[in-house]
Amino acid sequence: MSPAALPRITDTPYLADGHRAFARTVEEFVTREVAPRADARTDDDARALLGLISGAGFTRYCVPVVHGGLAVETRAALDTRALAVLRESLAGACGVADLVLVMQALGSLPISLAGTPEQCARWLPGVAAGRTITAFALTEPEAGSDVAALATRATRTGDAYVLHGHKRFISQATVADLLVVFARTGGDGARGISAFAVERSAPGLSVVPQAPMAPHPLGEVHLDGVRVPAAHRLGEEGTGMRTALRALDVCRPSVAAAACGMARRALAESITRARTRKQFGKPLWEHQLIGQKLARMATDLAAAQLLAARACAEVDAGGDATGAVSQAKLFATEAAGRIVDDAVQIHGGEGVMAGSVVERLYREVRALRIYEGTSEVQHLVIARALCRD
Image (cartoon, rainbow, N blue to C red; front, side, top):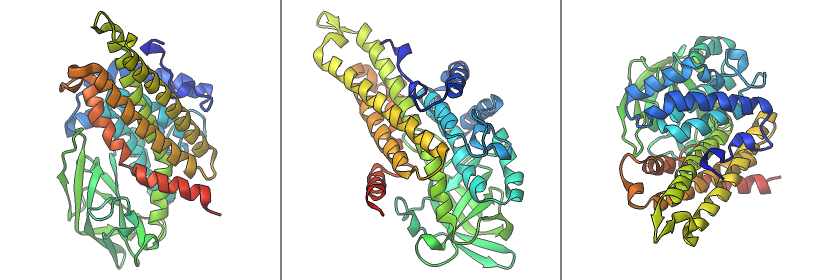
């Protein structure tokens, strides 16, 4: 099997012919426009990549059709399978490109899911066009996996809320025009949390950049008496956590797809290396231990792609897809970590040199096992799905 013939998510039985044709269009764009920008690092790089992606019309797949978005299969809800196709291609070529695309979806989904018609009309067309950059401000210094423990507070004062708090590890915070902020309006626990659309220009909102090991726009968000109109609350008071979890359930299959994209690229690079690099008088792949690695990598990738595609199909079909989503996110991200690690090993010294493809993937793939629910949390979610009444 040549690197070019490696399977994609679109080769699974869960994606329709329309998604396969869409994948070819995406891959041509990524090869032409994104791959040459694989070393993107700065906020300006992120904005430029979003401009390219939105110029090709792909940010429209981050918004439901009824709000100006696009879908491969015409429907009112977000086309999760199209988002997976985009992420699989983008993630293998450039981590920043993948991030800016998916954050347009995750950052705007609470508006799509819980917003009023007026709120949707105000913000979603700009998101679809790439003019409005969004962020999903949930995580806090003391509320990571236990997000129901968040401490940011929103106090009602007349026709507005005043927000005080501190968010951390917020992707796109440094470039966002609009942040969906989750804050406590009631008592302890999930039922006391509400969601708000907060414009970046709001007085009292400040962002401090953070520096992850795989560079991308990331920051801490400080809310010091930020006044938000009550008309910018998304849904009723106390429904914010439910909105956040629904948004994560829609986007988590695409995390699995991104992991598949990184793993696929790592395997392709490894096959090329194993064919062309000779040691002890024969190509690397003819050494049994290297051949074993390649076989294990290919098998892990195929299983991850099937789980990711199944999860996307179940989300798009409606109903309870939580178990399938968590299985896909868990397995695909863990498998991608193993695959990329083996790729570095196959490349030897070249694999740990800054600037090599597998070195970049090694840094980029690690976060996938943490964000949008750690692997440990996914185990708990799966067990709950299996055992609840």
